[in-house]
Structures are given as structure tokens and as C-alpha cells.
Image (cartoon, rainbow, N blue to C red; front, side, top):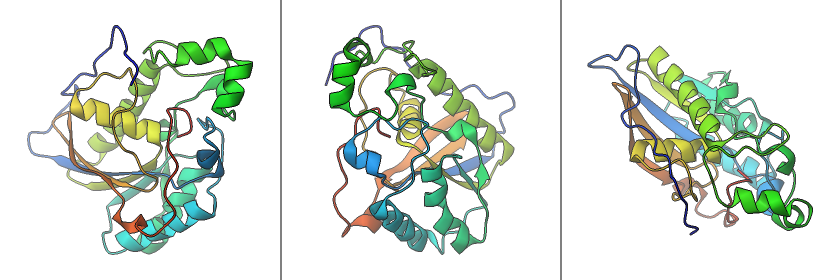
Length: 238
């Protein structure tokens, strides 16, 4: 694990403009299924990459597992891999997903679509800076800094939770989004290497109450037990 300097910590609890003393919003957060770019360890970011055959099988397993566990609302990132993952759930629950750009993956600018060996050759200087995992570093070509990304993710999740007090929401999103929420709930720095496991179509159950985000269970992927092992992840191919 790389050492980081000047780490910025996410605030906990998260300020809420009008907290209710009793309402709890249950959040089921799900990473999209596998893509070919996951297998190739390419930076996906906001590139619109579809699921591969394994990813589609994962999504079907997800839908079957949760068929009888209907939630009050279903939301998804508007990127193809999230929408394809949400489709079996939507069919089982007869609940069309609401699309939310705020649940998109972090934008990685000029690195999107490239694997690490290619990046090291074409963008050695950017790769070196990326490895520092600084909160305010944004890649050229429209990239988001960790700080900007973190703020976007929290605004999206806060907005959903506070618009649905006391309800059960399912959100299909991306590894980077889940990483930001894990760090927030744990009071961990937003900078530095990922410290949590985030399997494709894994189930992550959180609770939002009075502006505070808490984790109940994390990285439950029991429905994938006999599928091919998932590839290792890096911070860019989420």
C-alpha cells in the first residue's frame, strides 16, 4: 500500500439540512456486473461499456437472489453496465429504475479506455501523479478529482435518502462510488488506495439516519459462489 501525505478525511456525520429524529432510509448499494474492460484492467470511468457474458450471468444471479426482497424504489447510474445490471431486478420487482447521473463512476479524463501498461508508456507523468492519490488532482480531459467526485456522490445519495425517509432503496452503481461511501461511513480519508473489497454485483447494505451513514453488511457476493473468479481491481477500471 502506498503512503499518502496530507490526507483529507470525510466528515462524519454528514450535515443534513433538515434531519428527522426518527426516519431511517435503508440503502442497498450494488456494483455493476463484470465487463471486458474489468477483465483487461482498463480505466472505465464514464465510458459506456456493456456487461460481458459473466457480467450478465452475475446480474441474473443478483435478480434471482433479490426477487423476493422487493425495495420501495430502484435507482441506477445511467451508464450501460449499471442499467444492464439493474434490468433483472427491475423485471422481478416490476419497478423501472430511476436514472441518476450522480451515481456515475469517477471521470478519468484522458486515461479512460487505456490499460495500465499503455498508460505507463503514453502518460508516464500522469501515472506517477495518479499513484499519489491526492484529493485535488484531476486528470486532464475532463477528469474529476477525488474531492469533487466524493462531493458529487454524497450529494446524490443524500438527495435520494432525504427524499425517501423511512424507505428501502436499491442503487446500482460503480466501484468508485461504493469506495467513497465506505470511506465516508468509516470516517476514512478520501485519499489513498482502496481499503475495501467491492465485488461485481456484491450487496452492500447501509443506513442513513439523521445525516449519518452507517454500514450494516458489506461485499456479500454469496450468489456468485460458482461463477468464475473475479479479476483484481485497480482504482481506474471500476
